[in-house]
Image (cartoon, rainbow, N blue to C red; front, side):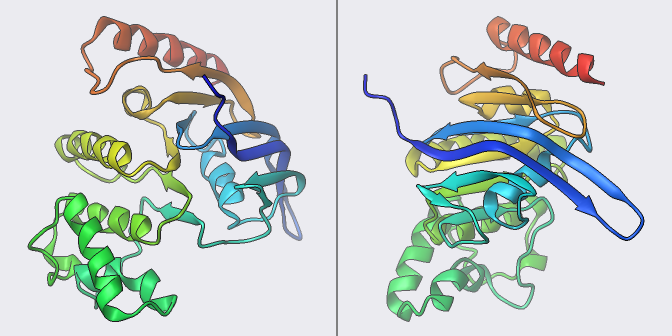
Length: 253
């Protein structure tokens, strides 16, 4: 089998935040390769630096040391090739579902008929058919997150970063959204880097779980999750992996 090409390459990346009075070293000598269309989950203790790593990959923060390549280009700042789904939704409350999803294409100057067709495809894909003219405050939390996912996909990025997108949802909705994001990813393959501090979510979603250390964070260990999809939380192999990874994380505390 041919080896997939590397879509994301982090080489010896470090990040330090400095102010007049403090220096905060958050990421230390972080190296990672992510293959094209791979679903990678960054997992680690709370406040360990997971979000900072994601922001560095997305170009939302500059690296202090090292380098990051995405799609064979050095990351120097934000780029439309790199989509982002946040835990705290950044939907425009005065726009409808359709207007939110098509926003990026409108900013690119795409004609209305074409962008509406593309936006409708992703609205349908995330299961929001019939809600095109609804406003965010008329939707549940899970539905709002679907809008954010549809908007990110509609911009057709080559890489999609997700920062604990289901962290604020209730347990039942979170399980449902985990199922949905796998279905969407399987239909519309993208390279995905997903941050979570939920061990079950990590094992359920990932092709590979990258366990991070406490702050300043670096890679502790990687696990290839060779379990068929759809996955079951009660599968003995699932439970064994969950226990093993949790044990590794506990040792970093």
